[in-house]
Image (tube, rainbow, N blue to C red):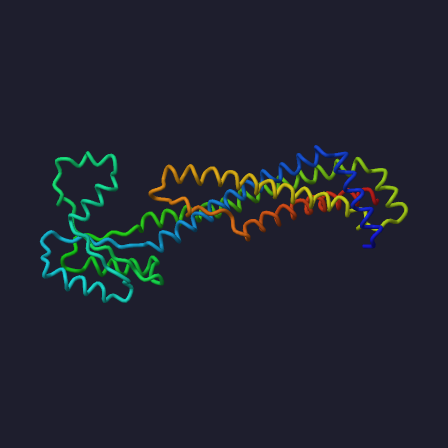
Length: 302
């Protein structure tokens, strides 16, 4: 496309943006809402991945000891567990330490423990696996072996929570694409309607350009560029709204569940997520414009 043609395209785009400003704003807002919902799923998925990685890096197995276990039997038990190829470290937690940790965890509610014996909690072993062994199969294998050892009464690890979180993440991933697909189709129709309004407003001009033999690409270009601008503006607006929501919720959740979810664990979309939203906005704007143009220009060209 030559420079005069490029200049013509951008003059037509600027004219359309002035004359149909509110129509373009409505279309960009609709795309922003669609991308905001889709981006919300991306944001939830990203932070669930982060939580799984964080929990995986701190994954521990808790082996509770029998009260009848003597100090003489404890030493060989510890040595045997430390010899496991998957195990990184083993820490013995006495009844007194377990009681003190429990009391501190209750904080201001520790008064409910008055009258209870300090040795009601069992002594235990906190077992940390090596970083390359912190996956479900390895954890289950170690737990199975621990349950067969003499002196261990019970073995626990956060399997149930990790499974539920993984299922939740899978559900969000599917909902993201299913709901996002319906929203994208609806948005494309809305973008197409906007393009139809712009085409009807310039019907005489387009017919004249067709009669004088103007290239079809030159006729389509202003509408496609308008759609791209609408898509990029909508995507940028959705990212701004997502950032404001993320900024607000990260403080709210950290203040409510700070013991379980530190504030620095929350993460906004990475560059891949931001680029994906911008790309989807660009595609929706350009795709909706091209779809409507193809239909209308073929009708008028007959």
